[in-house]
Length: 137
Image 1 (tube, rainbow, N blue to C red):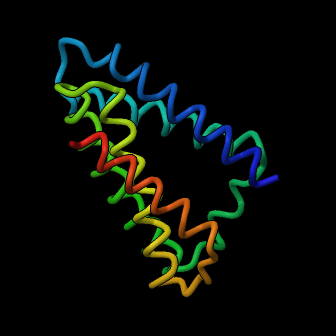
Image 2 (image 1 turned 45 degrees about the vertical axis):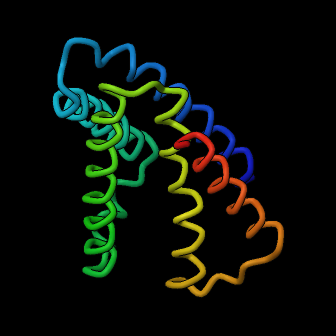
Image 3 (image 1 turned 90 degrees about the vertical axis):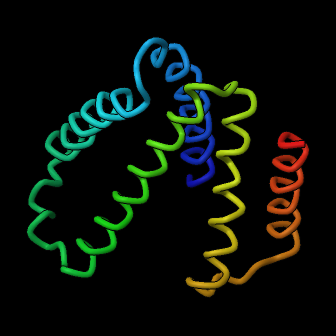
């Protein structure tokens, strides 16, 4: 099932880039990020409320909260820089470079989470890096 979710994530991430590029015309990236964040806030909490998962909030540990907060900071910074790049760059160049995050996440997962790399995962990550280098040059 994870593969379907991952493909849907990729599709909506691609759609995000196109919609963001259209929506950012004439405004600063920080304003665009703030608007996007409010929309996501309502959607995320709406899903939690309608799915009946609100009671789970009481079970969140300090460790969960710390790392989710740090993840939120990283997400916010990622979005801010993404919109800054979209302000002046082409989606066809910004989006693929942004996907270097995939290769970086893979490397960090191997180092920090002790996930075991296999040949196809390493080759896939290297192809992502190679594609980014080609786009930069």
